[in-house]
Length: 447
Image 1 (cartoon, rainbow, N blue to C red):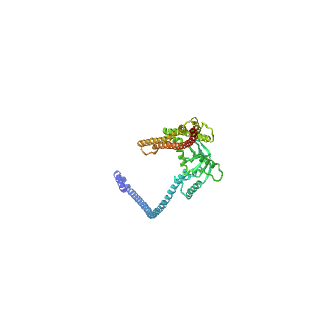
Image 2: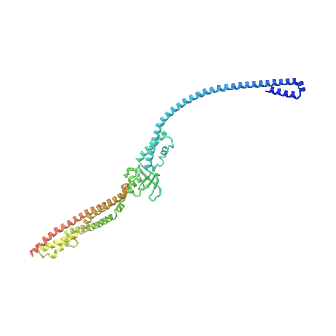
Image 3: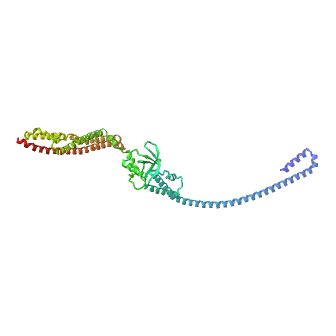
């Protein structure tokens, strides 16, 4: 390309200056040749460098190819090793899963047992003395701590402690909620896991907070006396009433109505039955005192010859004094009249007792009918889903029946006793009237 360029330049000079071209043509040719040789050398040098660079690049390429082949071989080895490791990991995962399944079953069983033991401890009265003994169980239940041999040992140790404390009578100082709502630190005597007493009063255990509360209604005084003696005892054996239900019976004691509440459940009929019973009791006391006094005075009259007006026998003797000179018919009539009058006095009020004894069961039956009517009305309105809705009518029915029988039976027995006592006095009067008739009849017949 450069040669063509120079030829064009020379041709241009030849047209412009023909004379000068003739003189310098040799120089121009020589210069062209030099430039051509220079270009040839330049091209050769460039070709040499190109070949050299090509050889270098080829060497690098061969080196890279060798490295790539080595890397491929290494990668193949790594892939083979990776696959082997994957197979080993899969096998180990299978073994871990198999072993983990057994461990998970074990952990689940431990967690379940911990929950059951925790529930047992929360309901146990022993927790009022040892309030924080079940804290580690909550960590097991919530899986906040791993299950270890120490944990398993703690489970059966706390059960052994529970069994051991159940058979002990222990004293400790702890918070007790009194009836006025105040929480006081008091000396508490715990009888196993069954009862707790303080200052002679029975306590109820509250699982929420593990606290002890005084019962709103205490058991019988003899049971409280046992509790007080147990608290004061230092050694030896003591008799104590124990609630085997661990507080359930004592809790029902608070809910069960006392005598006054049961009477209030009977309503107006119950009050009327009690009023009749009270009236009957007054009659029994009055007539019992009268008959007893009459009996004592008659016995004293039998030992004396004088006639007294303070007893039936004395009045019987005085009744025939004015008829000594009359006929036997008049004497017998007078004695019969006197015995009849005294009998009326002796049996006075006993008929009322008989009526009371007969009426009170009927009134109780009336209360039963009314209570059953209320029960059936409750069933018709609300159904039988809630037994408490029927309890009011049933309680009314049963309490009125109970009151009626409780009043009637003693009145009937007392009336029978008083009637027998009056009959005994009347028999004595009959015997004495016969003797008086025989005694006063002979003088009257002689006249």
